[in-house]
Image (cartoon, rainbow, N blue to C red):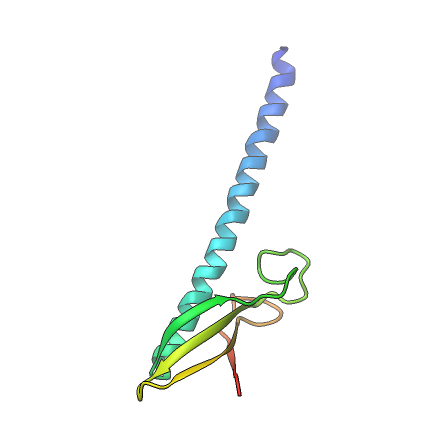
Length: 110
């Protein structure tokens, strides 16, 4: 192969790998930040997070570029200082900036 052809192909492959790595890193960072926000909220409210699972509706969340909802949403179960269990939905981050904001809203089950 001609060297003039290999160089642009190699540059494109390297750029593709770098963009993919950056996307993966951002995805991991957003969920790690959401976990930190949830843990700090629980500590401030004397709660222990027993269980959390993703509750983002399909096609939403920080991993989806065109999602209307950039928040991380968890279905949580917590234990309070009196050993009572509560469950609900935790929306972490703001609707506009996602986990760049430290906002958290918890809606408890009835």
